[in-house]
Length: 105
Image: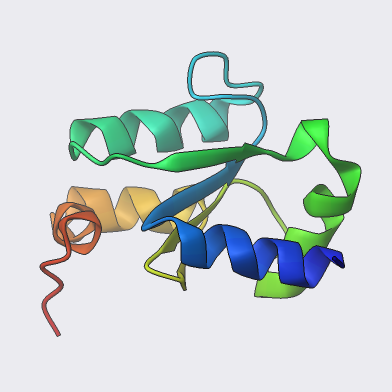
């Protein structure tokens, strides 16, 4: 399975996926740690993928989303953004709705 197929499988097999450096228990960068904190504050149950453990995923996710940095959040197969976008959404109360499935359009 190529990296694109692997990523597609990951984001469709789980409602919420955070591609991050490290794990939720031991984040390896501040942005990943902050992203985990926001998701936990929202009460989100999420799957994480440690990009440091798999260089192919680390580079592949950047191409897949056309987003140059990690962490990256996917909810129900849709790319939401990185830590900066997550922070903005969280401060507006929108991240909570997105992860709970109650998005407002």
